[in-house]
Length: 467
Image (cartoon, rainbow, N blue to C red):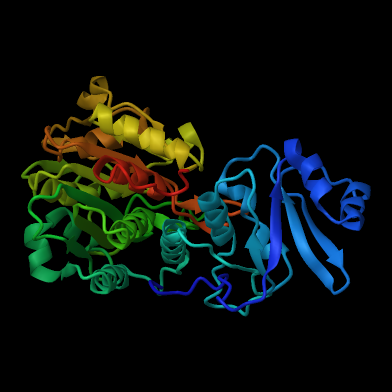
């Protein structure tokens, strides 16, 4: 999955046709530059350069060029349908226009994605010649394809071990070090992760990746990801409808892997550590039970008020270890709560952050990269809702409100107060296909976090879709 080709890139020697992208305000000037018969063809066809309006322009030899209307859409997704709508395997080159070339390339490549590992493709995408200087757009697309592939993979083929091996393969491909921790070492070092995964026949494990570890003068970026490869809910069993998409419950780990790939491919001047907790939350005679008490790596004891709130349990040991390393930034990604989806819907990941400067940077990057985040509060007034009568903390609240906030407050208990920390509660899924965002697994917040990190520690380099 890591090295899957972008099958929508035109070879260097391909015969390409011009692809124009036009906004309504420049339509008149554009028509004036065309051959009269082509301008007449568009005019009589009612072309107004509205968003997603694609027209193929005829010539003596058939289709000789194409024009896509942009309307006022400034996002990469204005170009997101082109690979599927242009003639199959035809090769194109974008002509200059009133758009961001990085964003256009990214949108085209995101729209060309299809998860077809187990079925015969119905058609091949159109091809795009990538102009020089688009390395980061291509890298972002490759990382997004990786995240989507991982989330879309069926759970019978992507279990805890396979997910951890993906991290090890990523490390090998980028000159990093990786360790997969399982068995007794996992019990000793990550006891809560071991407890969450104990109910499955597929053993839990933790993958740890380290890159540029010998560059002590560089800031440390630490990433953690929830890698629950399938979530039944445990003894607090989900209904069948709620279980249907739970192969995506490792979307946080997939996003962290995609971000790690972006950081290493861009050779950002940072040290990187990545930790993903790879488990399956199942029901069996060895599974954790409601009201069990678990001792964490941090030493805090946790009463299991609900076995379906396992994601925060998976993350707490990872965050404790990562925070102890005093990173310049600690970010965790998790498909953590339905409450975040109720509050913000599927397209807006919830951001919780204990550092105002980083919160501002992440939110601003979400806007410029068209990869949005929405901040929710780490509200101290709700912290007492996590109290337990027999342990230091419960994993769920005593009241049925503010579920996403409560989960973030739980995680905060395991982060050193001086550590700049961002928790991102995401959906990692597109419920329906839209331009550039096919139905299925989705990489959310990855480009935004990468851009924020790049701007902090590589301020003179353009990032993502930034002009």
